[in-house]
Image 1: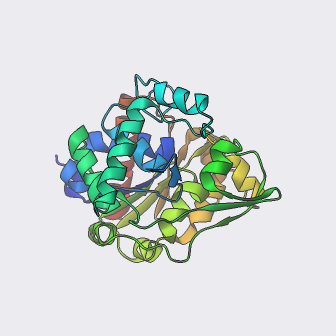
Image 2: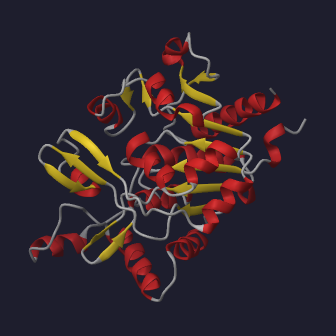
Image 3: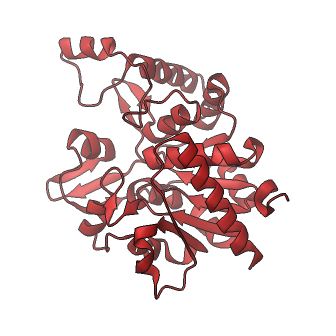
Length: 315
């Protein structure tokens, strides 16, 4: 029997390593013509004169099966000759760019300088690397996230990489001018299911939701909206999600993440060990193994999420 979701148009909001893992799982379960990944670009910045899109590139490399499986970011089989020369010459080396990765940044810079949009450039890169699902940046314009701490205000990557995300966060500043692309708006308007990946809610997902009119579209359009917890037992699988939740006054638990997304959600996916947190919660949950280090586990979780969404759609 063909599953209810077989012909659904599925959209995944994603950023970083957790988002890339979720996207690669969905790519194994959903017809690529029906799958759109919307990437966070709030952490984009300029380094050594080149436009760098860390979340977008992590998604691109993972979906192309050329990513570094040990780090979750960057390219497999990297070398570092260019950055060694930058270091020798006294240039900025706090953010490393591998030689293969540098090739992508040079190409992107060249095409952007020719007047192509970031959406057009991303589509070209996907075609070159054999990525079949549609990968969209949330916006074509810069939408920088600024991190306010007691030690000062930092552009996101300077706080995350340069400061190793240690200064305690007091506030995150997202630009009022952020606007979604026409392609993103069209994908959300057509979506049957939207999945919020197990990415950092504040650093990866909020910048996407902040790009007008994405938050409003999620509230009004899709049949089902689900989120996957980035926390297991109150700890982040990777990165500062739990630390950031506590610093911003939220409970660092799976239920705390669900409460943060609140009215946007029709269901929530959490680790089995966190299911008890939802005993008095009205939100439908799927409690399962959400640790997905390899392709089979990612495909398994994606299939479970799609089946869960179908159950919710059937009422």
